[in-house]
Image (cartoon, rainbow, N blue to C red; front, side, top):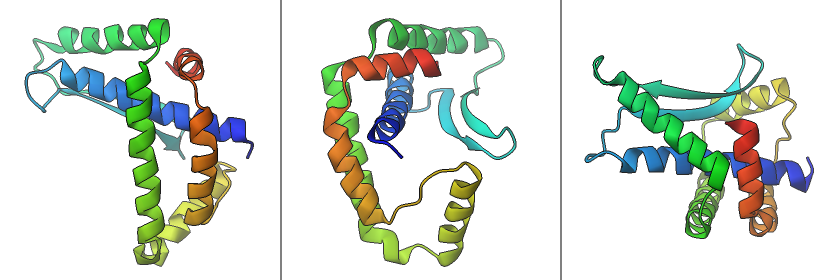
Length: 154
């Protein structure tokens, strides 16, 4: 893959994280009725972003309105510098953790990952290679690129 493709994947992960955080922060508890997921789907043969709302039937319009407001804000204004930094730092820790735990992952999980990657024509890298690629690309992700990705994705 190209560095631009890796940059795009990072921007997508940042957007999903920021959107989920912003929605959860609107509620008084950690039990927001909305969850966001972005993943590759075998059935659809493409990347799918889904919004699941588990709200009281009398309140679903408010929950959906919250999501729509946050999606519009991301598309219109993007994310803040602190959100970008926070999510890049968190992603780096996840990649580092993946490197540290790579020898403990069951071989069946590795096989499923490779088969899924093959179906979607993804590049499979060793965890160390993935870590190095992330470290090289992450500092080049910009607020403007994340905003463009939001408009494309959302």
